[in-house]
Each structure stands twice: as structure tokens, then as C-alpha cells.
Length: 479
Image (cartoon, rainbow, N blue to C red; front, side, top):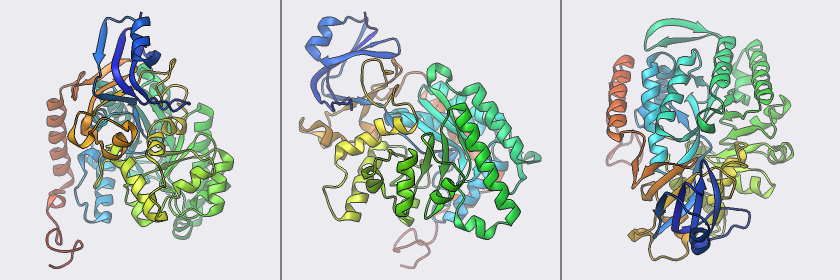
């Protein structure tokens, strides 16, 4: 006997056969899918104490966000007109201006946003920029994980040291200033890995991170510091392999994958973010080593350069989709990022046939699971896999008429069309409302902690409308 039946749904399982089941049903027992197929067949063979009538809805695998940042949710648009100022604010907040309460409130807000948008699993770097990690003390990672756990989604928290040179100054909301070295940050990260990886019914996991090393780092760092950074990156990557977890880096571009290869950082557990303006040999290195790419088509990096996602996939490289959310101008809505990815590459090739909707959906589901080493558990709707199921309400003007479900879903839906979310067999969102938590409580707590952070960092000026916002074609410009 099943525990839950989903009936009368159009099912897009993203299974190996890439079926579309027009009038289908899914039987869930415990945390797993036990059967799916035609509605008449599944309802005949399975009874359950609870049933969800999904008439007018599409059932898809839970969406997967392969790259995002914890902490950003309470900063978002502050100083967004000035990338350097925004990065500086992140650096201040994430090293001295934040408390565990800040990270807990932000984590719950981001986790709720994901669930509301049908994202059942996401990567969250515990910090911002490509180097500022809040790994001076486990309390901050603990707060993030507790926040995610309260909402009910899956999270891969990426933790690791900052880039050399060390030490770096940290403080708890401005109090107890201290200098933290590489060894302390790595110790914190490994402690979090030991205590959190694979917990809460496999919903909470850890990845290890070391910042990218690019040409400018070798040019601008002292030789000894650059040598330390190389050795530290190798040590973190080795620790990730030994623990069997993902090793991730944020901000690859123009030759940095060559450097990563020379340091033996690539491999099947490596997930490299952005990857813009790669050279042909770097694409080949990814293919040869089984390295995966997190493509963030809505990110600033994708404005400054182009991720050759199409060319990478042509070579057999796993390319997952990421939001790089939630700042400075983008949310965790993976429907938006699927649509952005299609237009981004079609414009580059000047070919509307590039990146069909089905392939975009794969990048946000099964390819994301594959990049995280979880394809045997999530990423598609198949018997034996964890029951991460999203129901999208297609009875909306922008999603009608009821035909060509995949096309309408990928090209026209947005996160607010999500009606129901199931994670590991548990209904965590129903009728667009969270089941475990109070949305009002989370929003109120986030607002309170954001105000406290702004006061601690004396950053109210970052809330002002900047010159050039109105009646000009660029920030700082004149009407």
C-alpha cells in the first residue's frame, strides 16, 4: 500500500525514455516513488490514505539549482548599481557584520524562496564573491543548515577557506575580532562535513570549496602567497575526494581551468561555476576528466563573458543550471534561468533552434543531479528514486491552452505557478503555501535581521536610489 497518490497529472518524468504521460499517476511509499504511469493503471494497483488530484497540473522532478550563495538573500539589491561596492558590502557582512542569527534568518528565507519556486535541491556557498566564506566558526554553517532543515528542502552547503594570503580578520557582528588562518577555516569546514553531510533524511549535504586561481592572482600575489594558494587548493580538493563529496569553485574563466588541471583539481566530483570564455583545450579537459559545469546564464559573469555550454555539452560534459541567486538582480526562479539560457545561446549562435526546451529542463533536473553525484536518487521521476515532485498549475492564462506541456512549462511558466512541492515523500508546499513553517514569521525575521545587519555595517547609504536610475541609459549617466 502506498502512502500518497498523485492522480490525473500530466507527468514529465525526465526518465531515460523521456516520456510524457498525459493522464498519469504517481504512487509514493515512504520517501520513494514506487510506481508511475497511466492514471487508470496506477490507481488500480495502488491504494493510499492520501491522494492529491493534480488535474490541470504538470508533475515534474524537483528543480535543482547548481550554484547559489547563502547570505545574499538579506543583501540583494543594496548597492547593486556598483559591483565593487556590492562586493565590498558582502565582504564586510560575511566576515565581521553578521551573526549566526543573520545566517539562520537568511537561510530560511532562501529555502522558502526555493520551495515556493519548485526548487527542491540547491547548492549554497556559505558566503559571497568568489573568496569570502563564513568558515571562521561552525556556528554560522550550523545556523544555515538549521534554517534549511526547518523549511524542508534539500541543500548542498559549500564551505571552505578563503584564498591565500592568510590570516583574515573575522568578528561576530562586530564583536570578538580575531584573525583566522587557513587551517582554522579548513578545520571548520571538515567539522561541518562530519556533522551535517547526509543528514535529515539525506536532505542536507556538504561540498568543499577553494576559490579559483586565475592569471591575475599569479600576477598580483606575492610568489609565496600564490604558492600557498596552490597547495591549499590541492589540500581541499584532496579532502573532498577522500570524503566522497563535491569539490566546487566559483568564477572560472579564460585559462583558469588549465590552472585547475595542472593542480589536479578536476575530476568527476568537481563542479566549476560560470566557466566563461573557455579555451578549446579547457573544454576538452572537462570532457576528459568528467568535470561538471554550473552554468549561470543570468549572472553578471555571463554578461562579462560567455559560458560555452552548448559546446561543452556537445563534448559530453555535464552542464547543470544555476541561478547565482539571489543578488544583485536575480531570484532563485529556475524557470527564469531556463528561459534565459535558451535566449542567451540562441542570440550567440543567431539560431532559434539552439537549446530546445526539453534540454533546458534536463539542465535544471537530471543534469543538476548528475553534477552533484545524486543522479541515482533525484533529478527524475522513476520508481526507486526519492519522491521529489513538483506540481505546476497550468490553469493559467499564460500557460493555456492545454497542449505541448513541456514547451509551455519551460517557455512560459514562472516560479509562482508552482502549486505543490513534495520532498522525499513529504508535502512541504501545498496550494502555494509552506507546510512546515509560517511564511510571515520567516519574512518578519528576515526583515529584522537585515535591519540589524545594516546598522552594524553602517550601510544605509547602500539603500539609496543611485544617480542614473531614472531617465538615463546607464548608471551615473545624465538624462
